[in-house]
Figure 1: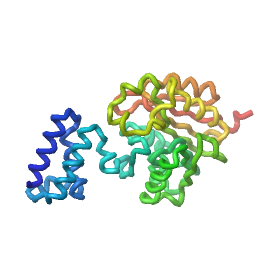
Figure 2 (figure 1 turned 30 degrees about the vertical axis):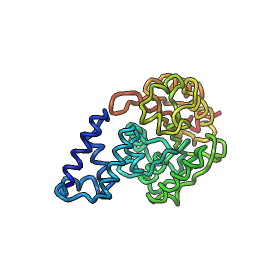
Figure 3 (figure 1 turned 90 degrees about the horizontal axis):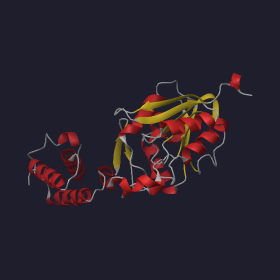
Figure 4 (figure 1 turned 180 degrees about the vertical axis):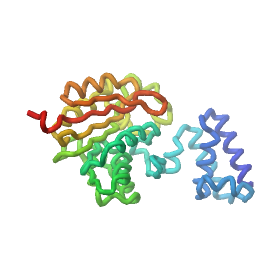
Length: 283
């Protein structure tokens, strides 16, 4: 079969299976099966697809029709212009998480940053790649996730400036940082059954929910921020779109200042930022 016909077949199969964004997913999966850039599909539409690659593509389609995310099939997810390895051991990065990166880059680079619950490493690695003079520490409770983050840091050229450690939040973290970032598990236990099958079936539960009201990680992060932020240092966390006021209140009760809730590109609350007290106001 020629490529354009294979692509049309894949698009139809995904669309009939009710997959949202069927055309784009069909393109990404075919490019992966052929080991070419997706941008080359249009240029090579008249070429024959080798039988082995066609079988691989059909297998990819079967997986996508079972609601496995494209990123977990291809093993990569684009984030802030870079390709990150993702596996079932880490959260699949969402585009809205780029809101946190955009906000962080509005200020001067810190000398040191801390990423709590790093997963695939997207926050720490992206920021270090943007700030070549900065150094970072990234922690996660999952050894498997740390392995993914370590490979991403090496491939994207920041491994020499990033320390990766196993830690339950601040458990093994020492010293102070100019910036602390986190995309913690925040989905309430009651919301878990309503998640899309692409999320519920393929992202680790540990990265999705802490149980209860979903706010427990923010309480831990806020409680330790004063001990681990430089005077005037920044704290930035991703939130569920209904959690802004609650997280802001948690930060306020912890003595943090300059608290603000920021929307993502869809207008939903997505990031809460704060600062520690400046040195002149510390008692």
